[in-house]
Every structure is written in C-alpha cells, then in structure tokens.
Image (cartoon, rainbow, N blue to C red; front, side, top):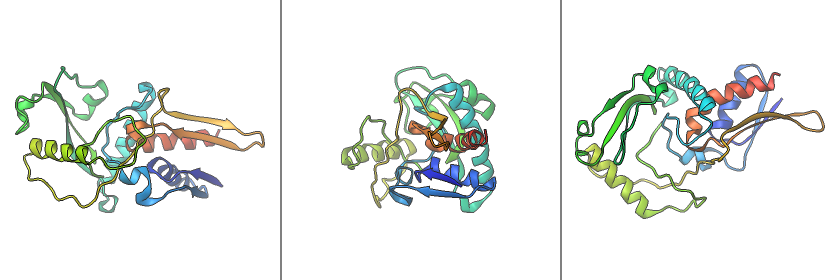
Length: 222
C-alpha cells in the first residue's frame, strides 16, 4: 500500500505510475481538484525555475515523451503548440537540451506586433494543458492582483495581435520553490516504513511530473 501526500500534479502523477505498476495507492491532501496549486497554475512544458539542471533536464525530457504520446488521446487535454521565448535585454542562446527537440533561434520581427520590443529569442514546439502569460514573483499571497491581470492580458493580446479576451475567473497558483533544488530522495522511518520526498519543483511541476514520478517508484523498489 502506498500513501501519497498531496493531490497536485506531482502527487497525482506518482499515484498513476504506482497504480500502473500494480500498487494499491491512496492520496491524502488538504485540497483537491481545482483548489490545488496545480489546478490554478498554468501548465506549459518547459524546464523553468528548478534545480539542479543535471537532474531536472533528464526528468523533463522523460515527461516530454509521455506528454507527446498523450497528445494522441483527446481526453487527455494535452496539445502541442509553438513556444517562443524572447528577451528584451540580452542575447538568448538555444539551450543544448532543446536542439534535439527542434528548437531554433528567431528574431523578434518574426512575431507580429513585437517589432522593436525584444532583442533575441528562440522557438520550440512543446506540450500545453493552458497558459496565457504569467508572473514570477516571490510571494505566498493567494489574492488576485488586478494590475498584474491587466498587464498580462494587454501584453499577450498585443504580441498575439488578438482582441482582449473576456475574463471568466481569476486564480493565483503558487509554485513551491527550494533554493537548494528539487528534493527527490528516500528516507527510512524508525518503524521501518519508507518515505520518499518529491517536492520543490518551482515553476516546473508539470514539466518534471512524469520523470520524477518514475524515479519515485524506482526508489520505492529499492
């Protein structure tokens, strides 16, 4: 029997991987469904704000492969879109791990409406659930910031050259981050039970979910 604490993307993915391998699982969480961080946070595959890179990138690439396979299952909600990352202040190098996935450098003028706003960037086709901009603030405040919402909508609408969309609801999704990096390790309790830690993914919970879940199961089998 495996008990999973937490029902966000990391916990639920671990539950799926354990169940696929024949384990009985039970999830325990203070919040579930749309009330979790994962239910509010944007879900776009991209290694972001998580360390250490030598572990994060392999986990991310494993997850990438799973998500690409899920694009063939309509009920999964996973699709592939073109991600474009730009910088206003510096030259962006295409990451080494992104080159085998088809990433290529682009110039800002390739994006209608962005001419003169950005200095450099690159493009890569990645798995998506849904995202329309976002922020990167150090905060634990779950209150909606109306000014941030207005800025996100205005900037995305301008760059994408679309009309301002209707706002149906606003939610704040926090990404628990650890300065020391993702914690994924096995410990033994005094009574002999095994505890496996899997948290601190920062902005990469969705991106690392399947890769980390597989390592959790491997650690449980030791």
